[in-house]
Picture 1 (cartoon, rainbow, N blue to C red):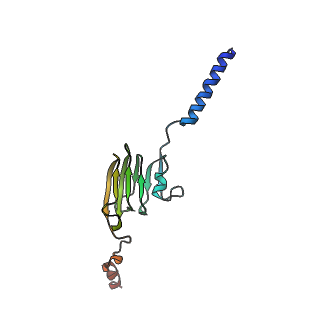
Picture 2: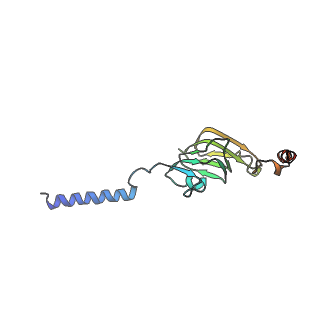
Picture 3: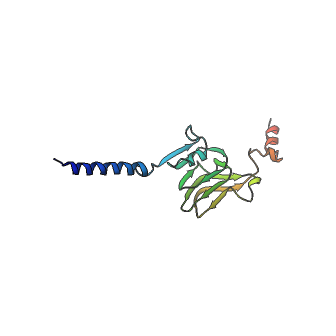
Length: 158
């Protein structure tokens, strides 16, 4: 049998342990792959803002809006030919390591002289199949820039 003094010490140790867990968390954050767009993550930034999203997978397509990354994560598209972010991507923070792969980052002339990717505060970017460029096109047919060749070829073919 345990005496009352020993039982009290054990109870206080358990209370201290529970308090410590409540204050600091039960353990390391769970890593999660987050898909964009989805019901939970309709935008890239919505996934970046969730600490558990350590790998953010973008569907093929166009994503509009700036993205601010301030922690270590992987942002992965299908390929630089099929996944494009139209906006500035900023990676910041000492110790931040962002892997950007299978993406094209493109901005319009209003964002120049930046070419879409800004890295500050001793952050690091690991590029894989990453294309960074500037464009004044939102629609890829060229029509809004005065280039009617695609349109003319379509009209001429009918």
